[in-house]
Image (cartoon, rainbow, N blue to C red; front, side, top):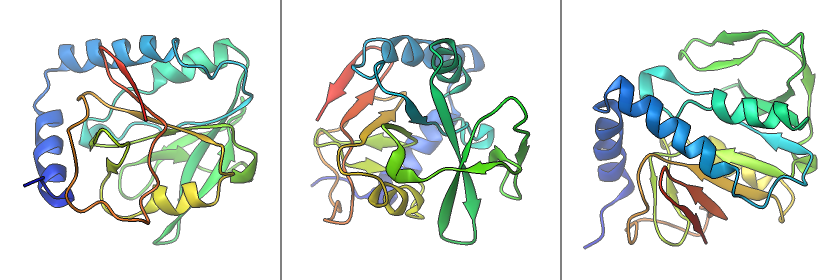
Length: 188
């Protein structure tokens, strides 16, 4: 029987937190390098999450450096209320602060319409071979992705290769188009 999101969430969060600092850095660098192989570099508007250290997320500052080096417009998420994300255009004057959950986000800035986004980098703990992902279970990204244009590219970043299937995926889940892992890019 396939594992459930709850079981996968606990297992992969623990596994991610057990990575040594050196392995975490090496794997984050490898994921950023793999991103160079994605067919995304002609697009203009990119949404990127900033890593939550307490959850040992991939260091996306490396991806941010790639995007800025290619003069891409970068949009960052900001928690708004208990259920939604707002999106802020990153500028030279954007100040990043940790919110009450220790999630780094812009303190203020220019709001950005999700319908204008071309590419969204999506945080996850694990995904399956159909592109269904396991996040932290609050639904922020599923709600956000439903506000984007249908052709927006959804790219998961993961330390771990996809598993065959997730038992409790459902129709409200918005699947990824790609998942970038340290040693391979998966296309769904």
